[in-house]
Amino acid sequence: MTAHALTLGRVLRFTVLSIGALIFLAPYIFMISTAGKAQSEIFSSSLSLIPEQWSYLENFGKALSRVSMTTLLMNGVIVCALIFVVQVVVAIPCAYAMAKLKFRAARLMMVLVMLGLLVPIHATALPLYVAFDRLAVLNSYTALVAPFSISVFAIFLFLQFFRAIPDDLIHAARLDGMSEVGIVARVIVPNAWPAITAFAIFSVVAHWNDLFWPLVVVTNQDFATPPLGLLYFRAAEAGDDYGALMAATLIITLPLVAVFLLAQKRFVEGITMTGLKG
Amino acid sequence: MASVTMDMAIAPADRREALVAWLLAAPAIVLLFLFILLPTLAVIILGFTDFELGYSGFRFVGLENYAELIGDRTFRRSLWNTAIYTAIVTPASLILALAIALLIEAEKRAKAFFRTVYFLPVASLLVAMATVWQFLFHPSIGPINTFLAHFGIAGPNWLGASGTVLYGLSIIGIWQSVGFNMVLFLAGLTAIPRELYAAAEVDGAKSWFDRFRLVTWPMLGPTTLFVTTISIINSVKVFETVKTLTEGGPNKASEVLLFTIYQEGFVYLRVGYASAMTVVFLAILVVLMFLQYRVLDRKVHYA
Image (tube, rainbow over all chains, first blue to last red; front, side, top):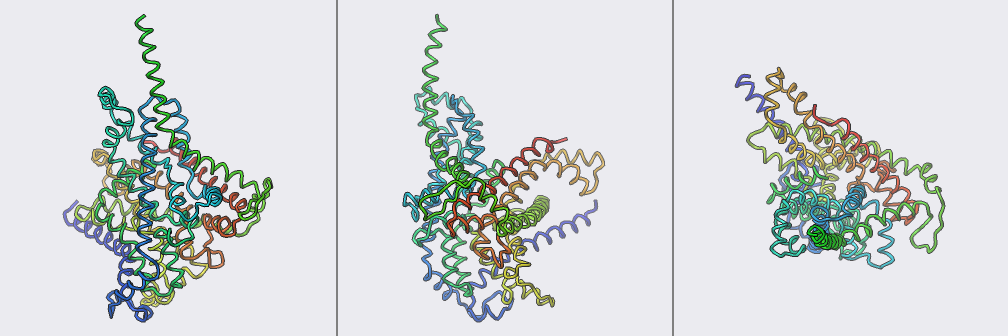
């Protein structure tokens, strides 16, 4: 192969990737641009990206006043944090028992876990909704969090990870007089950080984005998560004030995107790890 | 004598370990029953009843719900639309993701930048980005049709016409899922031993395409199968964009499975009937997983 062909190939590859990247970024570019345009300018349907007169303040003001964005984002953080913490606290001891202890039900548990992996929230939503309605816990953090307190995927992921932790480490801890709970907390968890981080990313992305379950159990704006809140905002806006709408989408998209940009490497590793094991 | 005392010493220790194991697993077991197994069982049972929320009693109606499903035009439409959506999004997202992954893998300089850009949609709130897409797709003021107009093409009313709405939603679906698949393909590509390419070259695989056909593609087999399954399952579960942008319209042209279940169960509160739909949905997922295991067992192994 000649050097010339190599360069041509490179240029071609780079061009294709760049055009693709531009197409993938286009929604973000138009979101940022439109969030700064006045209603009249948006309706003049020009393709110019820089607003003629900057209306960012006005549009963001509207976005912040119609629906309480801070409440939405706080709810998102509270719900995702609660779900993640409970999932991990429940799944880690169980996975440890299955991987490292003489646990006769381990095989049966494995079958249940595999079955559980098949069943998404959409399948269990109807009976859960009826039950939550009877218990009068609709419109609460409990309703938003409870169904996700058990993550069979977390058990599955941690189980695989724990199996690779050497038994000697655990025996040594036992000889030192550590209890099993102590071993989980002080030997297993510190060794399992990569798996825990990976699962954190998986869990937070999934529940931050989830619209289905919040839509089912929440009708009160005070408990709305970001996706649900945006739905309310759209309804209140009647959908044609695109400047304010884009400002609102910008505010609501930014937090997770910012976290992603700051911790990209972790994100990609996490998705790869959880993706390939799921 | 010594061995007897050893046995007696070990047995209680074993029993204690088993007890500890049960205690550690107990919360998970209880929650698993409460939030996964019982509700799944309940949805199957409810599917045989005429239960409606707001009415006190219900009776078992046998297969009546399923008989109604067969004749239900909305449900059939919804199954069909879901199939079309899946048939567009899965292959398109898969091929694009593989192509981008191959290009990025070969790229030296801006690797991380491109990976970030293509992955960005995965980390973005879908409901929010769907709203942006709605603006891009706007028939008169949307950038896409404005752009097309420069070339004298009259763009369609993407999300507003029954002929194009599924394509519009598919474009959003593809845009959103490519990054996820790409990251999995990149991991698969990195795992291919470099020596295989050298060996293939020695054996006469000179062109780029030969190397892809003889090494990359077969070695990526398990990744491809996995990505395919997960893409199909995610496409079958399409809901967010439909609920946000079209509510199944216009004229039921974007009615999809989960949206129909949602409407029937949580808006019209016909829990029994919606449960029967859910059972069909679950059956589809089970069949897909079963197919994956079958293919995994038989086809995907290295030569």
